[in-house]
Amino acid sequence: MTELIRTCTLGELMIYQLALTIEDGILAFHGFGSPLVQLALHLAKRSHAPNLVLVAGATYAVNPKPVFLTPTSNDFAMSLGSECDLNIEELFDLAASGRMGRMFLSGLQIDRWGNMNVTRLGDAGHLRLKLPGGGGGCNLSSDADHITIWTAAHRSPPDQYGRRRFRLVERCDFVTSVGHRTTDGKPRSELPYRGKGPDCIVTDLGLFDFDATGQARLKAVYPDTSAALVAENTGFDFPVADDLAMVPMPEPDMIELIRRLDPMQIHRRELSHADQIREFEL
Image (cartoon, rainbow, N blue to C red; front, side, top):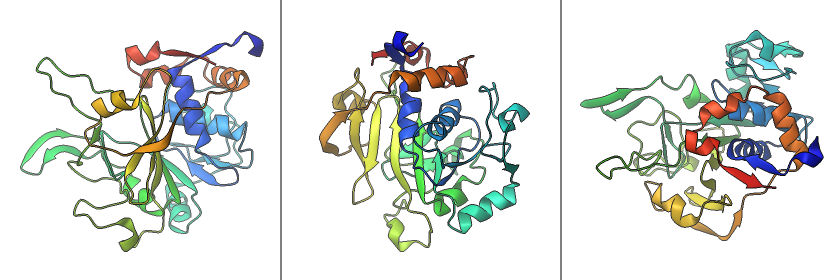
């Protein structure tokens, strides 16, 4: 089958980029909701990170071996073949004791410092939208060694009045999960957090790392995007790496594994219709 694979979709390419952020030999937790992240962890575990300790979202199963991705992360089938199950207290104890190597987090707003908002839009005096809340993301963003931030909604098309609702914003309306600098400018190094904070942002338009000041820096783009397009869809000015590159492309066997793990293409639900049809030559 692998010799027939000549292209990959944006979703498959994002899964691969997310997987590349995962180191071998660490404990990583993916939380609720995102099929892109679920698949990335299973892809890493079955390829370059065989010694990864994978803790599944919702079920807290340790090193599960599901046959395929189910439509919801809160499904017993996602715990099949697991070595054991944790409870939520044990999960937070692992992070607080410094044993969670990587956590995946996102937000309806993500600022230049890697702060994220899933609590509310608007200020306390003018609430525009109540969001689900962090579900422990604040604690884990403080304690996990490293954070991978992701969003499949970086592209911010203008509305009928030419206004854009940015996902990557100058300032979060509320900080649910912490990044490298507080809203009043205090750096993370002056705060009593165990973890080192976010080290990358994977989006549908590009990849960011964080520079020495803790600011998001554009590191790579996709074959059909550019630094100018990323800037147009971002609510803050950002530095661009001197060696700005094209994202690395997966080998065909990696794409085959993703398709085998997700035969129902559940991950496509996380993408806009326009992004579902983006395709790239390998």
